[in-house]
Image (tube, rainbow, N blue to C red; front, side):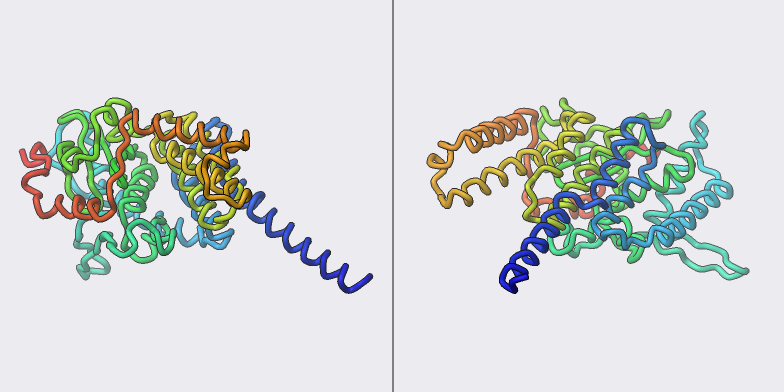
Length: 356
């Protein structure tokens, strides 16, 4: 074979392989299928399994899930020991459930004396990591696996781990969303719904969440923010995480896989802002790609292409819908100030029903 022709074949093979790696990466497609099977009740629901298959897809099969499950088992056993050996000052009929919530909270947020072979040692809880809070430098900083390895996490990994541990010991836990933020909501007989904030370890009232000014009343009414997500809605949230991981792994992808994740998530939770934004932003990237292909920065010139016009109208419709349902974005620096305010103004925002 002519050397020049051979070089062309090799180049085309490498190019095709790279394209297929991005578009048909089996770690991502398998993860999607597993979560979709859970949503369709074809596989048993497991938030832990869903979280780790998303992280494993990002690591391309190199995540040590056996070691992570060992750590989860240790923490779950610790929770069960607390439930068995500690009596709460709580007498309602859901005492057993509340005792489990308290145990998970203790393991996540409180320094606890532990007796090991007649010696008392202090178990140190998980702490908030202010380094790369949004995963801009490295997406894995948002992962539960990173939290388990370092004992440091953020408003993504900490509530995820809380939900995992609660389910491991036979309790439920509802994730809830605020701008740039995830937290836990519980419902108990004595006081009804209350919030558990893992990043600071306290129980804030809803006023703290709305005090930032970035939670519109329509967002609360539509369940965009402050809604207690059920298990399937939490899986929908993980589909968005999966798409974001895919985008980080393959930044030049055609958008089909992220859109597939977003559309499935929206089917489960029509007002899931993370999914709606992912959908709109993916269509925006596709439109920008068409502009690049046409070698123009003139939007009007691009709109002469029927496909570009369709994308442009679609993404504008999507952004309008997102704003209409009450979603407002919070600047990242303001988010961090808002998060710190929970500790600096604790007396103002703490749920005093727990003090009675």
